[in-house]
Each structure stands twice: as structure tokens, then as C-alpha cells.
Amino acid sequence: MTRSEFDAFCDALTATTHVVQWGNASVWKIGGKIFAVCSKWGDVGDDNRFSFKCSDLTYTILIEQPGIAPAPYLARAKWVQVQTADAMTDRDLEDYIQAAHTIVARKLTKAQRRELGVNPPAA
Image (cartoon, rainbow, N blue to C red):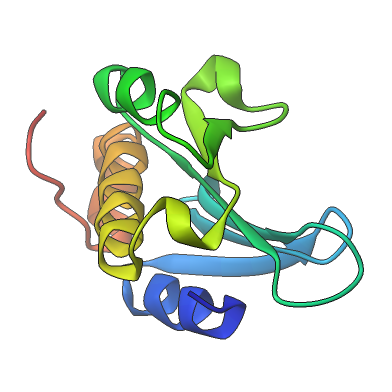
């Protein structure tokens, strides 16, 4: 997945906002809370790294997979980082990003969810 494909997918999710920060990382939020990040590793090529929030069980499973590691600075909050292009298909990455969006949306207050027009399914 390219950064522009990542950005387009995240932009299509409900009530998202986008900022570029932390050395040109593409950071996606809902209700002011981050759910996914695309960062560049190194100075050349398309070596993107995708990080996202996940459930406790998903975190435990994914960090055992080749090319996926606990996300730097965010692992304590159950974030993973996809570090190689062959670690996960684009479709799987989209599914995990959608799940991250839902996990973070669930943590918003009822008033925030109502204001943003999101009603994530119960856990």
C-alpha cells in the first residue's frame, strides 16, 4: 500500500481528520485521537511503515508475525507497526485500520460520538 492509498482509505472513514507531524508522518484521527499512522523509514524508496491501534488479542497475535512489531512509543497502548510490504496484504491492512478506527471511536464519549455522527458497534 502506498501512502496516498493509505491516506485515501483513512479519509473515506467516518469523521476522520488528518495531520502531518513527527517528521512528515501521515497521522489519522477520530475525535482528536489517533487511530493510524503512515511513516517513512529511511530517505529513499517506498519503505512505508503503517502503525495502528488494535485489540489486546490482535496485538498479541500480530507481533508474532514476520515484518510486524510493537509500534515504537505506542506499544504500551497496543499499537503495532507493519514494517515490511510483504507482512500483510493491502486488504488485511485496510481491515485492521477499519478496526482501529472503530476501537478508538468506541472510546470517545457519547456526546463526541453523537457530534461526529459515529456509532461504533459494541465490543
